[in-house]
Image (cartoon, rainbow, N blue to C red; front, side):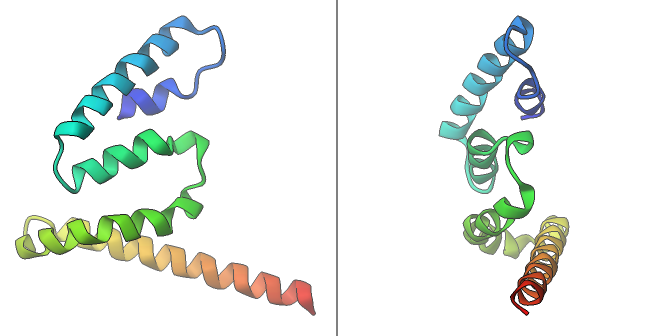
Length: 111
């Protein structure tokens, strides 16, 4: 995924990065077909929304909602996946803070 993300930085005519993008895309597509949750969700989001070509703030809500069923499965393994739960909670808090900020800005504009 890191190679795919890095290759997305390239500009037209950078043949090595174009090859890296094609190669990593094919690997991720194959991995997606064989992956189980939650890895499949993460790979799918990476392919559909490369980090540098998307807004992480706008993607957070859809990512959290699509990741939710996988986290319920992983919930049985609390000790090994505590970081996953913490990461999800931090993402939720960050999204909620941004949402409140945007709502207050909209209210100020309307006054």
